[in-house]
Length: 422
Image: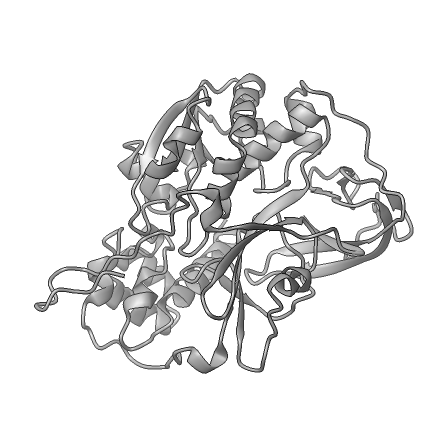
């Protein structure tokens, strides 16, 4: 971090960790676990139409769709027997069906998709793989996608998983981009990478743009504004603007799947230990977090913080038995003895949050409304929905107010109010 000037007029800046070469952050391969858990959006409560039941045999690479007729599924990374179907609710109150599979001795793969799958085959078999490929906006007739933005930069600090995928899997990335063009019909594909990786993507037949190293320049909405020249209005999404944003790792996984004929199942995750030392691991999706922690023999003590994601936007979790998900780019452990305390303090009106906010939100005023659960007023008067969720305001707050968490809660509550209003 660059310090402020003596006069305090220059805002602090944070720099992304950039992957200059593969040897700077090594890769450790984690073998498949004896059990794996896969999260499928939906709920099994009160549902009689189960297409997947306890005791069913599944193959590696098979699409697991618990609810008959639903388009939601997960890709099994191991062959074996379904041992549990359980409801699960994440930190954002999204409902999932947790499908647990116990590995078989014989790891049999599902039938090959071939090297030239069409959009229907990809949509039915290759979504939700490593990097969380999602083509639903392309399939939606009411959404006009005219640009695909492939983000080859990690979104949070201290993480290099996406960059590692770009640098080590350039040929698969090029194949994935070629496949996307063919199956979606979208001709404008923009690949955004840090300057140090442009030489690794010259084989990609698309527009290549560089993103800066200052956080949060890799935030998709800021990439839209600063690189594509399109501003996403408050409350709108990139899809509303005709742009589908995909992780470069997801596109590389698509390319590998088309090249090999079977789904890619291995996710690259940056593991950050208590001392800040980082290591990239290659791990099958669905593997328990504990297996990843064991790579560096990380032991959790009372008060330690286990985070899925990076230090700015990651979410603290409560169990090491939870699985690695398709979009788990980082797992971070913070030493409880060194953590600053979050305080229930009032804003001191120092203005530091306003200086660093990339969206120019008047955070000092907005947080007063959020603390008092006046979410509609915060949105209408103080630009809550213009926030790009970078977490910078919480980082610089000398009063240690959990502003980022207040904002996340407010947006969640507003999303619940929207259906009621209709």
